[in-house]
Image (cartoon, rainbow, N blue to C red; front, side, top):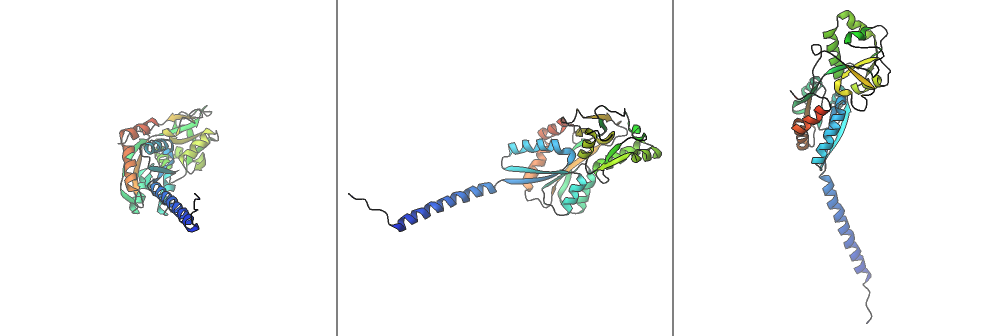
Length: 268
């Protein structure tokens, strides 16, 4: 018996049905992708290593969330937020920048302190200038690097210098400053490369990858300044629930352990 072939219009209908079904699958796949939440976190550069680990751990426990970090000086990040750069969370290295955003009406709620830090004098690993204390940075001809004014680490550094040295020695130290860097990580880079004799940094900035290049000279507690790191959700956040979850993770036991493993002090 001879089989009849399908009329052309039937073949066309079958093709259209297959196409519609394929498009439906693509549409469904798109809906799944839309369920992925992107969380943009503005964080102080000194938090880089710890926050990258926090982000990896949080993403592992929350597969539907992807965290995008924007690291930099807290003052620069605050300026970006004021200018309208979108984000979900701001983690600052001091309370000053957080207060600025609060006054601008850019925070969703109040900030919470997640950790603390202390300052040290960073020197190249072989400490060629034999620096043992802050007053040594007043020696004529010494090359000192500090962060730029308005950055949290510079504000802390200025406080330490003022509380430790007499006015005349303060002048001598600032006279030795050969570079003012945009953020503390670039201060550390100058020290690691041996381009300067010393700089003031956070103790957490001497990370495993550079500990063979940079040595910390302690600053006595009575002259030191406890750096406090607050974090807050931004008013323009489109992912408030995920932002709240991430902050709670940081404040929790696992998050605090990660921060302390990177040298930060516990939350107050």
